[in-house]
Image 1: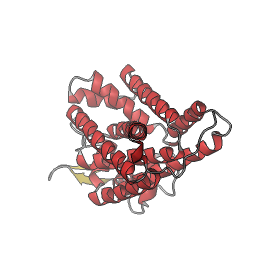
Image 2: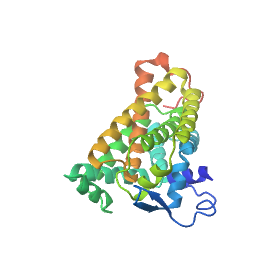
Image 3: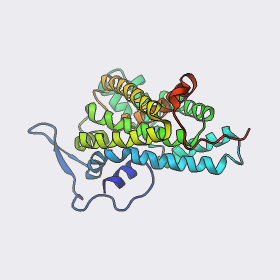
Image 4: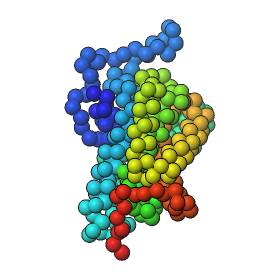
Length: 279
């Protein structure tokens, strides 16, 4: 099923089977009329499953909110935030963080597109990658600590993974191999439309019509800008770039949630799950 392909790609949560029956052999995708490229069918399934990316984000968010409910009674907010951040990394297998680190290493250390792609493919992590991961984790921790509500915890994984589906469709692959190329080859706009409807529904229900749609629109615009930068540097997006965009999207969703709630409280609408943490 497409849902389980998305679940396995975005998390470490196991799903039944590894791929649909009859897809045990690699499929050849035509890059040009005379140059077909063999790609992993399990990754092609991921491209077909982008409609479920926000649903997987919803599952992640529900797990994080359940942790919140279980821990906020006995632990102070900063500790709860740290546990939630650790849980997010564990649930996703730190795959997105790994992609972020590889992307940061390549974009800073490489001088040409070829050098950047080669650095990105290196299994070693450099100083720029570690710095990028630390900055993202610090921003997430600060954002979650300053505005810790179950509704926010549910929404931000949904929005970031929805924004990724748009980037997959809009931007070309950085190379004719790897996860980015395979996922891009089989993704379609129908899946994106379904993903958008799912993300809209979750965001509006938990944050109200105006704030919910505003966060979605702003995150999409900023992810598009980040995609333009990465495409200029790499010639397109790779699987590592996809991971980096998920991490960036999470931070953007959290920061926008805080900004809108603080400076335009009338936009906040309602928070069905809001609980006041003990001092």
